[in-house]
Length: 237
Length: 296
Image (cartoon, rainbow over all chains, first blue to last red; front, side):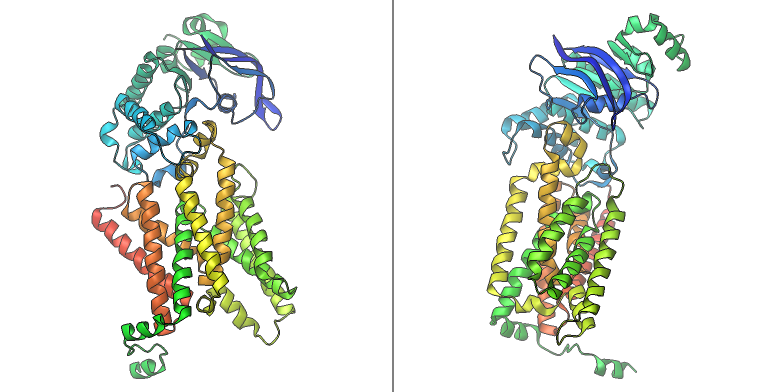
């Protein structure tokens, strides 16, 4: 079942296109990795997908009941969050906000959703701890739980392992895979090509000139994929 | 030497604090001040938590100087100061808090506005000195807070009470949204929260609170009412809700203590309140250090 369809979409800043003529679809249960060099337009594409930017041209359609405000989002951490006084529970619950309208308090059901995701991501024990006192990996799990509270179908992850050590990184990828197996569709922007090839079902590579969209096995045999893999030192992977 | 210093001291410590207080509490102006002062402090503290966390600690300073500038211009033109400074300050607050990626933003934008309106106000005041007044005296009273806090009229009191109710209601009704918009604007926007509406709301309330607070502590010291309670509470509590409530309580306590001391010992009102805030802050720092730092 298709959730998201991009038809000849161009994205960019202030009218200047960064990535042009993008065509791809995301179906339920997919694990799509968006790869490309710095400045290729990965972040811009992601912001467009999240409706934070409007596309310069082309058509983006949300299908099968996916609303544009029902996409969970794991942004990169900001400076403000480093010393922010908030408990883990408060942060996770704030993910439910998009479905609560003007109601001043969270409903029982929303609290249960938050509990469920904290359980899945193994952070229930931390729920009364202060967010600013957690390790980088723990903080990332909290933000992932928040993203999951905002959606039932699709989450977008922006460099989810940036700044994490190898062991924590492996844990994080494992968790993301687990969520994907639970039926949540994943779109991940990443620099980590080997992880993308290991875990993803689909690859979207964007770069000036030519783009690639297809399954991981097609990517390994494609011209553009071979060149990029060589450059990234993954040629024999 | 010390004797001479003590004899020159204007502060009379020999008064019986509670006896004096009892006398003063019978007077209307004390009651009015004790209603308005803590309420303004409460509003400033609620906003302060959001502003400090959004890295806008100095916005109070900037906006209060805008208020100063517009007040002097309004007085010179014989307009009601409130009707000029409130809209101008609100516009400036909206412009400063609009967020996003602009060329001029954050601390530089605040600094530029702050000094511009301060000098504009002072120049206008010197060219058109107020009748029968002395320029430096007037400037001093606007910058450091005048005694007008103890000469409040009924309508001032009503205005402050109404404003405080509005601010508290906004924080009760939109608590979740304010949290989300403060913690992570980008996430809130991506998941469909109308971030710009809440930023606008915060900007308008900030402007109104600042314009009122200028009368309480003066333009120079407003930052204290915004920053101290938030910084105190952030050292004591780890959840956002506790920090908001804690900041409000600390701020109200400091305002009451400061006011009472100022009234009994005839010290400058604004500065005494700020001194009380400073003491509270130092106590919080000590408690935090005793607990072993921030990472708790």
